[in-house]
Image 1 (cartoon, rainbow, N blue to C red):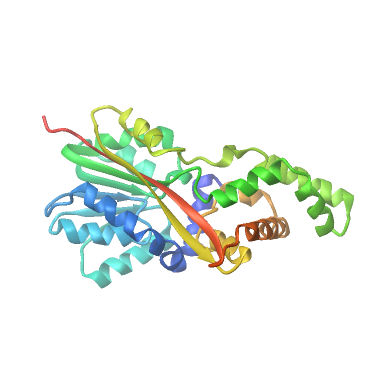
Image 2 (cartoon, rainbow, N blue to C red):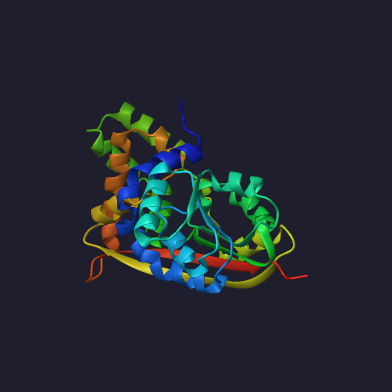
Length: 300
């Protein structure tokens, strides 16, 4: 039975939790630190960190607001286990909840937090409908901060995707991959086209302004700041870059469950070869394109 998008993501992040910080968190540390600064964290505040992951940001916020209360929320038990261990090792108190971010937003009392943070999770929820409800959680003077990858993130991958879906090259390479088995080639090709033929499976915002518009559409909030940032990562090979996208959870999407391991291996080899065309002296680059939005509820 096919898994819902949230369940598929949960299983994927349970799998990658042990390596997540080394593969992903380290690349966005400065982005998280900038959001913390924009949130103007103060001692004694009550904070909700939604989709807290391994707790990297959660622990830093807990240090900043101590002796205030911090609640870390995540749907992945593997991520929560890592977050609990991090908080324990850091000697800070954090209450952790196993829940989906959208469920927590819907159920939390109105005006119950001074700060609400949600980072790198919009790809796994219906953000257009969920984000407008975040402001309801804020007390007067409270701030909400969002960080997300944008739809143009990893443009090298996106450029190859657009090239491949409009070109006969993948079909010919697939024909070679199946040892010129025409029937098998056609079945796999149709499966890939049905699953990934249109870019509608990419669900993150296109820009910081688009995300800000959705956040403010819930009413009652004032925009404080939007900003974007780019992080370039270097890999020894296109194959290493593809393996990073899988091992870090970056390409986690429920559509992947509809294609088998051999087909995914073919797709991986196709993109690994394509990424080699971006090679520079230092290696093969991948660029994360990140947006942040901060808004506040004015005091009466």
